[in-house]
Image (cartoon, rainbow, N blue to C red):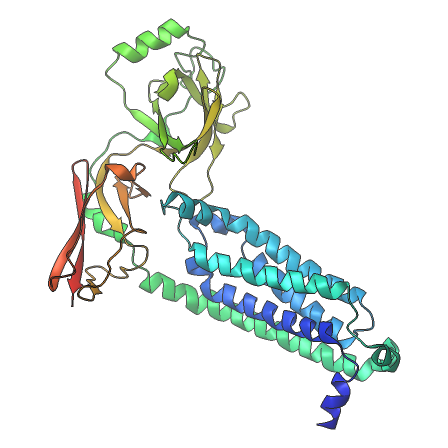
Amino acid sequence: MEKIKNFFKGKKIPYFIMMADCLLAIILGIYFLATKNISLANSASTHRPEWVWIFAFAGAIFEVAALIVPKYRWVHLFAIAGYALSFMKELELIPPVSADMVTGVHFQGGNFFIQLSYVILQVIIIASAIYVAFTDSLTEEGEQAEPKLKEKKGIIKAGAAGVVGVVGLVFALVLVFSNSGSKEVEEKVYNPVEAFRDLVVDYENDPLSIKYQQGAEDDSEFKNPYEGASSSDVNSALNNRNDTWVVYEFEGKYTEAYHDQYNYNYYNITVYADGLYSGSNNQRGYWYNINEDGIDCLVLKATSGNDMVCRKADQGSPYMWFTDLVTGNRTCKMSGYPYYPIIGIYIDTNGLIKEEGQVIQVKKDSEFSRSDWSVMVVRNNLSASAVFRPEQVTWTDIDTSKTGEQSVKAKWNDFEAEVKVEVI
C-alpha cells in the first residue's frame, strides 16, 4: 500500500488522464476488432481498415512509455501521433455509411452508429491527450523526486515486459477476431440474395465483353463506328435503331434544399452496346472503355462537349463506375452498374432478419416502424442495390391492434416482396 502511495505521490491530474487515454485506446482497439465485420462498409477492405486498431494500440504502447518516464514529456507526443493516425483512418472509412444514413438508402453495408462510436472515443482520447501535452503531469516536488532515465532501469524493464505483454495480448485478440470471428460471420450472416439463385435466367448479353478503344483503326474489332460522328448522325442513330442492348445504366440525384424544399431531381444515363449513349439533360454521344494506351477506362464523349470521364468504384460496391453529369449550372454525381435483367426484389430490414424464413415479433398495440427499411433490387448476376427512387415503392403495413401473423408487403413495378410479422 505504501508503494502505491509513493508511486502516485507528486502526480497531477494530467498523469491520470494519460492512464485513462491508454486504457480507452486499448478498449477502442478491442471494440473495433469485435465489431468491424458489421460496422464497416463493403468497400472498406480496400482502405486498410486494420490501421485503426494498429495505430490505437501503438498510441497506447507509447502512452505506457510516457507514464513510466513522465518527466520526459516528448514521449507523450508519440502517443498523440498514434491516436491521430487511428482517427484519420477512421475518417476515411466512415463516409460511405454516413452517405447511406443521410440518403436513407442502405446499399453500401456497415453501421453508421457503431462507426460514430469509434469517432467519439477517438475524439475524447485525442482531445484529452492534447490537453495533457500542454500541462504538467508532475508537481514541482514530484518532478524533483523523479529519478533520471538511467536510474529507472528496473522500472523500464518492468514496463518493457508490460509492453511485450500488451503486444502479445493484441496479437492474440487479432487471431481470435480474424479467425473464429470471420468463420462466425460466414456461418451466421444471412444473405437474402441467395434465395434468388434459382430465378437466374439465361441472358446471352455480357455487358463486360463489349470493348471500344479510343482511336482504333477502322478494321479493328475495337473500333467504335460512331467515334467522331456528328451530332445529327448520333441523334439519328439513337432515334431509329432497335437492335441494340444496354451495357451500363447510370443513376443519380440531387436536391437544392432551397427554402425547406428537399425534393430530389433524378437523372439517368444509358450506355448501349452499339457504341452510343443517351441520358437526362439531352446528353448524347459515343463511348470507349480502352484508351489509346490500351488501359481500361470508361469515357462518355458527348456531342455537347460535356464529356464524362468515369472513375472505377471500390471493390464491394454494387456500382462499377462513378461520374459527374452537368445539369445546367449544377453537377450531379452518377453511379453506374453493368446492366443485367431484374429478377426480383426483397425487403432489407436493416438487420432484423437474420435467417431465412424468420418471423419478426412485435407486441400488440406497440409502435411499429420500418423507417430504416429499404427495398433491394436483385439482378440476374445476383448483385443487389436499393430501389433508387423509394417513392416508387408501395407499402402495405401491419395492424398492431390485431394479434397473429401478418405481412409487411412492398411492391415496385411488377415485383413484390414481403416480411412476416407476428403480433403477440
